[in-house]
Image (tube, rainbow, N blue to C red; front, side, top):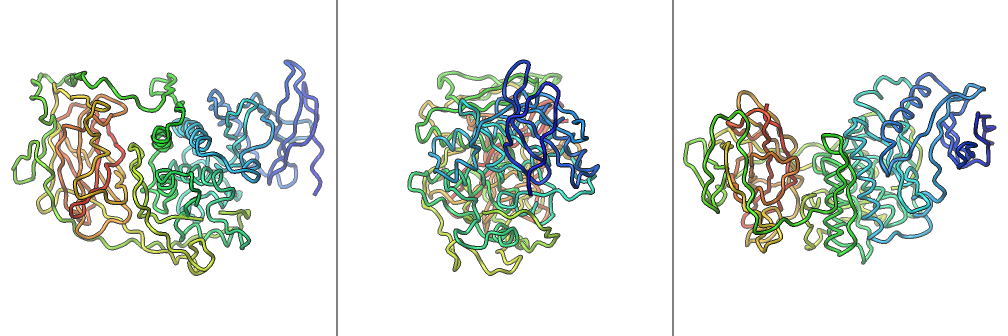
Length: 562
C-alpha cells in the first residue's frame, strides 16, 4: 500500500517520508521559523476511530509533559490538518534508530550499559509522572546527532487505567512484551516496562529479540508461548559480564515480583556493572520529590571516618542517647520477649508453600509478528543495589530448537516457585523500630564489608529475594511481604529494618541493624510493631538462608509511617 499524501501544514515545508506504522505515517518537514528539520507524525485517515484519536491526543499530552527530559523525544506542537488528520510535530532524530543499528552491528557492553541507564532514567521519569510506556522496544529509541537516545512513541502509554476505557484494540509489540501483558493478566505497569527495557538491551547485545529463533517461526503466536514458558537466554557473548547476564535474566523474569521494582533500581544495577567493568560512569537523570534535577552518578563512597547522627523524629517528645558504637539502633525480639540485640539471625525453618501454577489463560489476540529467547528465573541475579559477583552460572535446559523451547503447548512452563514470608504466627517476628538519636558508622569504602553484598562463610546462594510490598498496617504496625523465585522448603527469610530520614537509604544504614529470621506460613506477611512518629520512614532489606548459604540482600523498600 502506498503511503498517504503528506498534509499541508502552516509554517512547515514537506521534505520526505520517514516511515509508516499501523496507525500513523511519519514525515520529515522543515520548519520555516526558526529554520530546522522536524519529524511530523500524522494519523492515517483510514480506520480512524474516536478511540484512536483520543489515544493520539493522549500521546501528545504525555510527551509534552515529559518533554524536558534529555532522553525523551520532545514534542513542539500538535494539531489537525486541513484534511482532518491529527498530527504531532516532534524533534527530528536522524536514522538509524536502535533497531536499525542492531540489525547491522553488535553494540559494545559499555554502550549498552550507558544506553540502558539513560533510557531507565527516561522511563523512571515517566513512571513518576504516572505514565507507563507499554511499548518500549529498539525501534522506539531514536538517536540524536550527538549520540543521545530519545524514547518516543508513547502511543499506547496510559495514566492509571486509562487504556481500559478504549474500545479499540491496542496492539503491543510481542517480542519485547512480558507474558502477563501478552496473556491479558495485566495492562502493563512499571515492572512490565522494566521487562521491555531489559529485552531491548538484550537485543542490542545479540542483534535479535530474546525469544526469536534464527531461521525458525517467529510469528506472534510462535513467540507468545516461548515468552511465557522459556527462560531468558544468555547472550553467549564472551565479553558480556556474568553480572549483566544475571541482571537481564532477572529483569525478564516471568514473575513480575522477581524483577527490579522500578526503572531506577535497574539503572542503579547497570551503574554497578559499569563500576565493576571500570567504564566511565553514566548519570541517572531523574527529578527528586521536590521537582529538582537529581542527576546522579554511581553511588560515591562516603568518608569512612565520618559519623552520621540520626536526628530524632519531630514530635517524638523525647531524645534518646546514642548507643555505643557497634550496637544496633534497631533491636529485634521474638514474640516471646527474648531480645536478640546484636546477635546473629535467629533461624526459623520455613514451611513449604505449594508452587503457583504458571498456566495462563486469557485472550490471544492477533498481535504484530516479531522476534524474541532466555534464562531460568530461579537464577534471577543479585539485588539491583548490589555489585553482582561473578559466580557459576546455572545451566539452561534447551529444547530441540536450541533456545530452551519446550513443547508447543501453551501453559507448559514450569511452576513458579514462590515462598511468601510472614512473621506473626507460631513464634512470630517483631522488630522494634526505635525513635531517637543513634549513630551509624559509615564504613562503605573504608575497608568494612557492605552488609548487602557480603555472604556467610557457607557461600553465596543463587537468587535474590524481593520485598514485594512494605506498607502501614493496623495501629502502629508496618507489614512486609517477601518472595523469591526458587525458594525451597526449609529456607529461612531474614530481614533487617531501619528508621531513616533518607529517601535513598545507603548500605551503611543497615550495618548495625539486627538480622531477624521469620518462618513462612500461608499468610505471606511479616508484621513489625513500631513506635515511629508519623512522617518518619521505615526501610527494610531481606535475604534467604539455606543451610550455611545465603543470598545477597534485596533492594531496600521503604514506607512513610502514617
